[in-house]
Length: 230
Image (cartoon, rainbow, N blue to C red; front, side, top):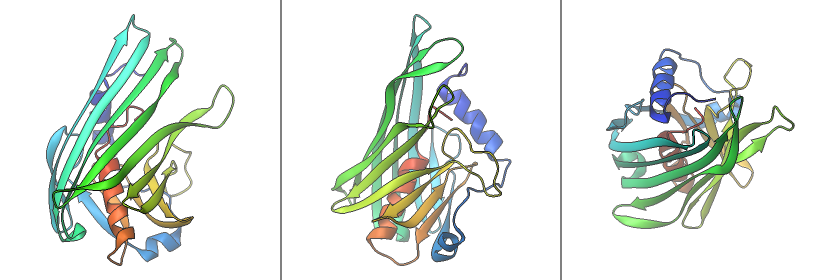
């Protein structure tokens, strides 16, 4: 049960995560077939600048939590990023937002209106058809069932499925909130993003093209997301 504000909790989480070099669990073949790109500067701050290899960008995000009668909880937030440089072959950006409603029952926080996170994108000053949608879904069954997020990215006619990663490398117990996300195209895993810690790591296809662009755009959008479950 949360007792800190969303922003405060995420700042604490980022600070603690920055002390660890643990990485998400991924198939060895994906690690060998992708390029690892360090996303530096997008830690626990609301506004700032980041670097993605030779590209530079800026970001902004907000998250608030309100309660009615100390029971009905509403989490809302927004985020945006702008980046320019060779990694995406020019300039690109996104605008995102989320909303979630819960009922604080004292011993547990129950979902009322499940979280949804949506983004729209632009490239070189022009809107991109499609966008990103991440939604909360049940994970497990019974009273101890958890919640996770799954989604989809569409850039024009290109579709990427987004799956959560809950495990750290080394086989530790799964984390309740996703530590990163895997990106699939037609059932084939093409990339991932590790959101654990102060600096993020993007595993992107090595060859330029739609798959690489889609992985980078999705990873940036998920990196700027202040997940209220964290």
